[in-house]
Image (cartoon, rainbow, N blue to C red):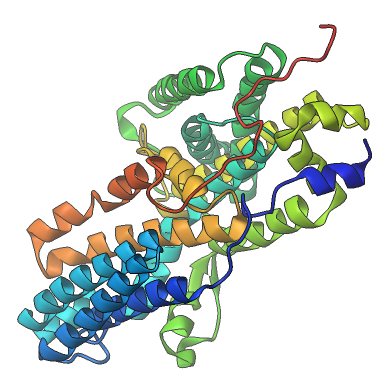
Length: 409
């Protein structure tokens, strides 16, 4: 079997055939857009103070959703109805609140900047999961790799006196843990879920012990070298310009990583080999592709990417380290990977959604402390929804999670 034959046998890049934009799908998307608009029109800078126009838009959105469902598009039709309900409820809350509170909470420039910051560690980790799972290895240990990257980046920055040294040491630590995962998952053909779960506990123990042993009750130094901010003269370009005028270098790095991973996985011969190993390893080895070698490289690379997300947390965002500071972000990254259908663009959209919910939760105490507490659970709720398969019809690579054994071994 030739490489061209493997290319023909691979599924469409998005995990399945595209059905195109039918009339019913257009109705569903239109209803979702109207539901969102029903809420947005009551927020700055529009600040419509009457609930009436929002109710009209919500009714139209629900009508389009019902029409889509009648036409057979249940998923988008249901989404349109849900958007209508959420839109009118959000509009009701916004019109009942004071404009001063709204302007503090809904400052689009600050919200967008915060969204990008909260999404950055998730983006790095989810891209790491994408590389690993496209090669056929499930990487549940992303959480542990992020945690290793977070601690060792802080420790490395402290010991070397530079943030560059911290990132290098953090990435190497994440890759080392990923190598252990690869040995068990690829060579020893162990259950990948069990191995990944175990490594998460290993990372928690190692970083906790080293943190206490190195810093004790004092904590990491206040003058820890930090990844620098990138200042751009874009304040005059509206809220987008305000959002990107001062962002951390690793935020830009995460956006660049999305493009690079897309190019590598879907536009290069190396990426074709990687995907063929994740879809049909037997056929890949038949044409001379090293399945074990490719999977080892993919898993180790995923550890380095996840560690970059952890390094951003410690020396790019918080500027310190605390035990278990990743707080489940590795699992949210896995959910983003599923919701994004194992595609870099979809992954970015999902992580931005999670990042926006986290950013909004941080600003809601100005409006409602109780609502802010409830909203902080939203990223985790979205994680459950994505893992349950409600968001999108996600189809993983055919050999994802399946150990490979050469014939005759």
